Image 1 (cartoon, one colour):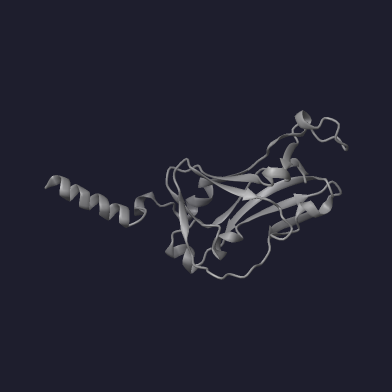
Image 2: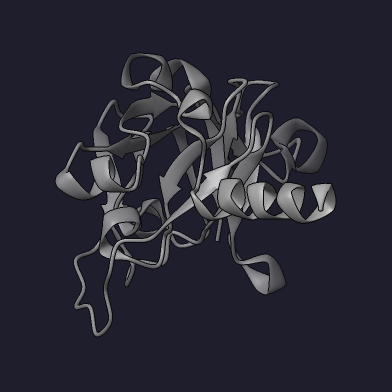
Length: 193
């Protein structure tokens, strides 16, 4: 009988979603997430003769061949689960963007292009404490407005900062989705394409 009652309680806790005490309060949410751009390598080790010479810690992003993508890591640094929008729907599709600064000082925001939605409904996923979500990024000009790939035929030298932003909405409250803005550090990159 005890096993039956324990099973029922476990099922009720599982089906009810994230327990209230484990949810991240709105004021604490922005402290819970961090964002990092994950390069493939560093320019000094790969291409020491690139002109103009990049700083020694310039990261190299490869956007050609079989690895036509790089990654951005969204990490939950809090001790509680954090819900984020799934990328496939209109609530999550536009959350990731990039601040791109070129050697001439020009700064642009690279963001996802508008698109139609054949199927669209709000859906979220949970990042466990200490867990992470990985974004695949291609900077394909059909998908990204102000893609850095348009600046040069072979490589783009720039400073890059990733931005993840979710605006509060009735759906974000209903799904207990994290709202706020988090940014990666700004760093020097060579984007090969």
